[in-house]
Length: 338
Ligand SMILES: NC(=O)c1ccc[n+]([C@@H]2O[C@H](COP(=O)([O-])OP(=O)(O)OC[C@H]3O[C@@H](n4cnc5c(N)ncnc54)[C@H](O)[C@@H]3O)[C@@H](O)[C@H]2O)c1
Ligand SMILES: O=C(O)C[C@H](O)C(=O)O
Image 1: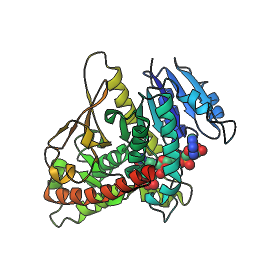
Image 2 (image 1 turned 30 degrees about the vertical axis):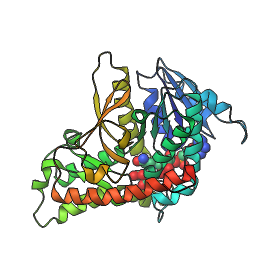
Image 3 (image 1 turned 180 degrees about the vertical axis):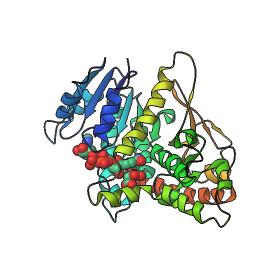
Image 4 (image 1 turned 135 degrees about the vertical axis):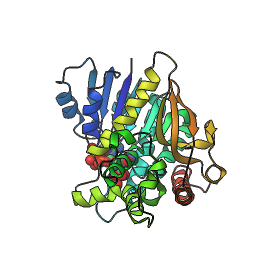
């Protein structure tokens, strides 16, 4: 029996993600929690015939801390898209003031009600909200580094799609899945797109390549601008989160001991790593990198086989950015310097 809970389930990401997960056969119970509208969303989805039990929960009032406990109890996977999205002119870091507290409180509840659950953090700024989640779980004494993820899958979706279109159909986006990956963090130039051998398909003046890199790094801004004050990426993000969660489900429900590869923002210093260079591991405890998922979560963090010179430079820059964002998240929980 697998129970998955979405916190922030009635939002722009929450609703399409709830729909996708409603159709997933590996989930037996889908629990939807939000501070508004969840009962309606759950009622609507409950008319789709599947084997799942589905329940919607919303707190009765501001002081109700019991409903979320019921929503979370027994969860194997908790997915958190709760929080405010950007408006044009804002950075993801501008969301920190509000989202830091939301993520801390929700993870606190998860730590109490389902301490063994996998925690997937979507709320921005991911580079800081993941350390907040980790430190909160540590305070409760239930942190397991193999089970906490910042979802950076959307950067990978964008890289696959934008590279395929930059190469004008020479390769489909589907064929680029897991051939090219984005590592680093999840904001601006902390995002490092790695394009493997495809670099040779770009002109030697580097202009088209730079355009691709910038488009992946600032893809979020493209959507925020187009939505013109009505939020940020939701449908592509729900697709991205679904890909990640579905892979996680494959790994944790596998009948044999087979593993699944993914990429996520994780606490690398407490995990088994392979070939992660010192210029990363010496300077930051967190980074988005390829991971191998098994029954109990992350088995290994692997560094990609090959990085070009510009990719190494971008990665070094990303390390500095991520490090500062991580410190901010840590300080939010502890109120003191690292
Ligand atoms: N990781 C990524 O790649 C990525 C991509 C897109 C968006 N995001 C982030 O995801 C977050 C959500 O985006 P959205 O477009 O769905 O926003 P939204 O405003 O449409 O939905 C957020 C939902 O969270 C709910 N919420 C707020 N506080 C809550 C609480 N304490 N408990 C439960 N629910 C609560 C709101 O009621 C709302 O329904 C934002 O922070 C956004 O920046 C991350
Ligand atoms: O850009 C945003 O604020 C949302 C999200 O992080 C994205 O990459 O689309």
